Length: 147
Image (tube, rainbow, N blue to C red; front, side, top):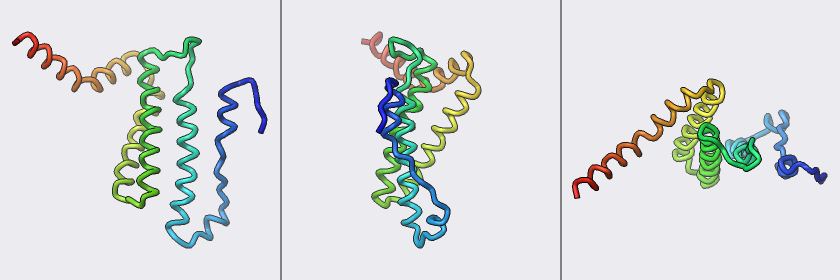
């Protein structure tokens, strides 16, 4: 193992790449063989997502609001991948499919936000995402005034 002076590169050293050998895959005799390889790949992906979610651009290691939206999606993605791995390894196929859909939706949202990044998009996204909390806040404020 080679150590560098870059902490990010040092973390990446620990992520073991999953080898994909076409001959091996062609020789798989059961669905379990495919699932096992998929689990290995998903562990690798989760590791990279975890590292990516830990990146900061600023010296004080903080995110602004827009970066927090993206970082929050990365953290959610990691948690969903973890749940997907858990349910897959427990052979809970129906639950795995439901979680896989959430993983896909999270990836699509993240990619859309990165690709179309703008102050307006993030403002609208925050308003939409927090609309339930805003309704709860208004209800609490109304109840407080009523007492």
